Length: 122
Picture: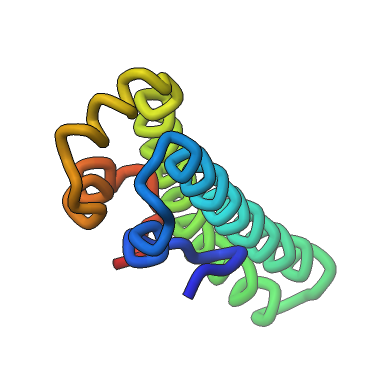
């Protein structure tokens, strides 16, 4: 199931293995990675803002949850870094065309470039 926050190798396997299809998958995966990063940042910011405007024990609990949410932001940043490194190699159309010519199985092709996809996707 492809969506705003999730795009997996299984979703990419449904797209034709052509240079245009690869560009389409890169764009969809980028949208999912950036969506996860934006959502994680928004959740952490909302928790910290809520901790700031409340008082007492609730403030401490919300700040603690905000710090826990920062681990999700860190994971999303790592996924974005992994995506950027992998997408850089896939931008060269000639290189992608030669890789496609060598590999006819989409599952193997996308497994070789698994850093393109957000973490948590299969």
